[in-house]
Length: 248
Image 1 (cartoon, rainbow, N blue to C red):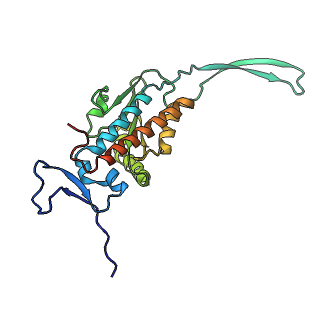
Image 2: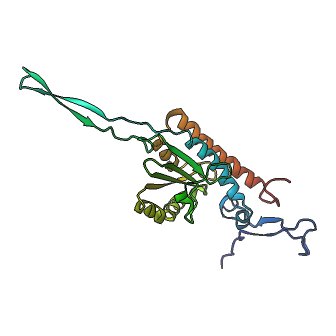
């Protein structure tokens, strides 16, 4: 029979006689095989201590700051004049003018009263239509004049779980999106994944592109998000056997 490998688990630090270490109450460590995935994404103790929330909020702060710089373009209606030409181009004459609407290129195009709120202490509160529900999207981009709501949901999962995280976030806000649409809002949810080790999901690139954040600005923003996630995870890893994430 094959021998069972060491299990990954977290428990209180104990001395050899099992009595515990004086002055180390609540000191949790991961024993057994400490894989990166377990420490950075799956440790129940780290979760209960708020270590993953701390990392998530650090990345969220940067993402909200980037999104807050996005601006929509107001495209006025334009008119074109019709020109009629006889066969062979011998004679031309002008017809009437036709009013046309230029299609929106970005999600924010068409109005200029967008407000960005984030589920962070120092940021503006979400609009009432969101706060009255039981859900708290990470970021809400809201236009009162056009009744448009874009909900951005951030996840910082282990890279092998990015697709799973994306599907979970979409499903989580599906009912809320439907309710908002019934109330007359144009609503959508856009999940974004930044891997715990700094891999940027295509969803992040797509979001910034749809918000008309492109070129070098987009490159710098994605690099900042990746570095924030990676540095935060590095700190979590370095403190994996420490009682506190930060020293008192």
